Length: 171
Picture (cartoon, rainbow, N blue to C red):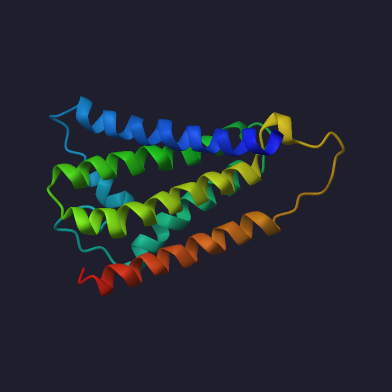
């Protein structure tokens, strides 16, 4: 029961963050979110030519900020906020792409699945760094960073797979 509650919590954060990003985009029609979308994902913003290193730094920044926040007991509460922010940016970029008139086949076959998995991996990473109160052990044990590092590694593999598929589709 506890494990299913944890994954339900992650999916609820993902869904609420995504919908929040879409509503943010739709709720402020005069705002130009292209700069934020370009920082989040340069392939989503049209007329963008950011280097692979900047794109990699953007992906790694979510993992690094979450790891830094998890070091202190006072900032540990903000770790899941990093994952929620990633979900909001995912929704914002998705609404921006759909509003700009992108090809639906490339959106549904390439962009959306990769960004959904990447966002879920960041949420899972944040969850392993700062688990909810109902999954914590009452016995004090040493910090094990093997699982979070493995999730970050899978996130990097997903990033490079995303770039490979993007280049194969003629991006």
